[in-house]
Image (cartoon, rainbow, N blue to C red; front, side):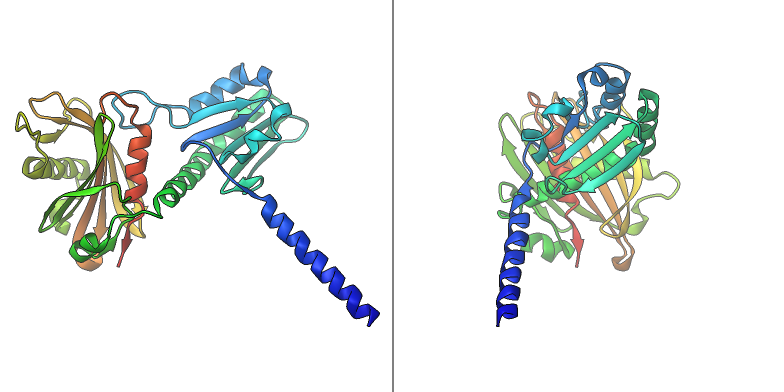
Length: 321
């Protein structure tokens, strides 16, 4: 009987500890696309700090004005414990006797990326940063996209119209409204202070994008869509890809399919309106089509990084049915 009582007490104590351990992991907080850098002031104000800023606060591609990839908050190592540990993205840099690079998930809170970097001297730490820069950025951006999708998940636009027309699902926040629906085209828009954000979905035949010149085919098609549907009310001008700047182009995988990512700026022909866009042309060979999802914004008095990141997060929630 005594053994059973001891076992029961041990078991209850074990469960209690497990419960406390789970409860001790707090949720992360803070604005989207922000990094907390934990580093001593002397290192931050020197060559190492410059290297970190150049890598993680470099300008976002495709925006009309320079805006940093991430907003950076720096804290001394001695102040690390406490308010800075609930950041989603943390880079902890130390000069010490051992060389180390490690990404720990959910170390102090969840969801979280804690990047631990140490080296014997500044040159060694900068080399580690340079070698792992792409891995760190991709990891952090993926976390931020998932977080952006999670924030909006409780209040989504009814997906039936998108599903019925394109046989896909897309997590569009309920603050967006359907502006226009045509046979192979949907336009959704969210009004913001002094502007708006738009999401477009349209369908093209597989032959619409040339293998020899994808970017030219994509810009030509988006200009034809602008000519058909995206007009300025007062001047009746039509949206075109801004000719003065060549868009940024890359090949990626999205929703398990080959896709083309194009980032650039748009303008209303013979009008003052302009802004950034991000366009994804997804090759859907199974259904012999190309699904195009585009986000663009008009916000002349606002910074546009996070507006376009919201559009990207919506687009990357796509699932083919």
